[in-house]
Amino acid sequence: MIRRRDFVGTVCMAATLVAAGSLPALAAAEPEPKPNIVFILADDLGWKDLGCYGSTFYETPHIDKLAKSGMRFTDAYAAAPLCSATRASILSGWAPARQHLHGVTPESKEEAGNCYDYRSWKDEAQHKFTKTYPLTIPKQLGQFPLERITFAERLKEKGYATSFIGKWHLGPDRNQFPDRQGFDHTFAISAKGFPPSYHGPYRNGKYVLEGVTPLSEQEYLTDRLTDKALAFIEKHSQEPFCLYLSHYAVHGPWESKEEYAEYFEGKRKPGAPHDNSVYAGMIKSLDDSVGRLVAKVNELGLDETTVFIFFSDNGGKVMAQARGGGGKFKVTSMHPLRGEKGLLWEGGIRVPCIFSWKGSIREEQISSTPMISTDFFPTILSMAGITVGKDNPVDGTDLTSVLKGGTIGRRQLTWFMPHYVQAGEGLTSSAAIRAGTYKLVKLFEGGGALHDLREDIGEAKDLSQKEPALFKKLDDALMSELRRQNAHFPIVNKNFGPKESDRSKAPVKKETYRKSPPSRVGEKTLGNSQFLAG
Image 1 (cartoon, rainbow, N blue to C red):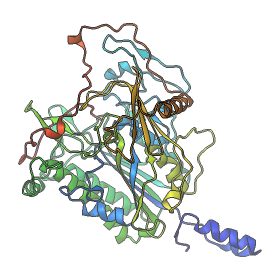
Image 2 (image 1 turned 60 degrees about the vertical axis):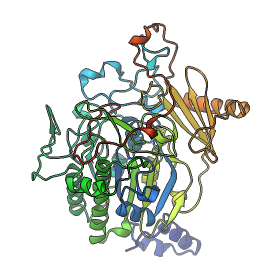
Image 3 (image 1 turned 45 degrees about the vertical axis):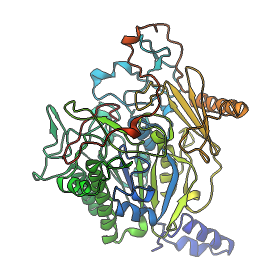
Image 4 (image 1 turned 90 degrees about the horizontal axis):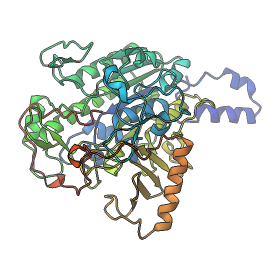
């Protein structure tokens, strides 16, 4: 059997045989095996939250080893700073602006009143005219639609067994859950953005994680999801498979195994960028999961036919409210990046990304090529020998040439976040573009900021006044691309005019969270912030 050693193995061999006039030999060649896909998605894992990305407090030996076995991207981005929008972009390859899904989807049909069921990406915008903000927030889809083509549906066309395990959070309609979106097997699916608890019986008041009955009193959710993933791999080891393991970790509620929290409590250096022992314990369990998956694939002899992809849906959460109103505590830090989850600064959208495929992706590669979550759709299809349909307006780019050490011709990345966000320093309705090392954050109320990420990764030095021509050039390019995607832009709110005391908009202010007191430690449960619950 031909074992796939690179992305062009059989194709190159076929071309050689044709050139030599050896058509009979070509006809006799066995078809190239389809690679298995193991896609691991973390929730709210910050750019600096892994050892291989610079953390000296969190311990991630298995993920670090995975990075060393393949390619680690330094400039990888989520398509949105919130979970639902990024998750939709991964499945479909469509940018949030085109999907008209750029925030967090509602948890129930009753909460979907502010959403709109766009039948096509070409539909006209619908707006919500409240008194809260000077600009409207254009209505978004409340449900990832069945009409959208997912990479799982395309893989099934080639005979793949498919599984989706864990967090879905793409709308409340159970008739449009992953089992209707190309995944044969599902487990622990929820319309909510976080679990009631990471400990059995997975309950918090009336909220119970449906379909998950703990097998023991000591069961931990990250482990249970991994158990299901291992069983799926074992069952389908003799056929091509796609496993999408969508962990709830490390989203709140922040709960760790007791022994892990106690271990990291002994390592703490209060005031350090990373010093939350409970959060560290959650990351350790996530790392355990990756180690178990790799070990199972190796045990079954599938290491040369299995692609591992590791990613986070958006940046980390810096400060959170403790459960029971116990005040705020620090979750993590993306320093030196500015911002956090919910914001279009680097801390909200730059995330870890790792590709590993033994024999096909060279070891110990570090790529500074900017990539974005819409790229997964065309890249996964390309690995499986599938072309993107001409009738599917995918916004992502196939990364296989980058994974081979080459380049891609893409000139820019764009983001669209029309919502007003009350995270950290806050941002009004905004969009962003990165071209080369320059990044522009545009505020739809007016103005924005320009930064050179090569010299100023912390986005502290605004160059908009110094480089007005460049600012305008990038602004024009951003708006042109968003119009191409039929973005539904905010417009002047004719109903705006509340009293200042009625406004929920947080004023933009300087960052203060790096000087906040250390988090509460030594507890299994730190908190459960429902803010931006994606």
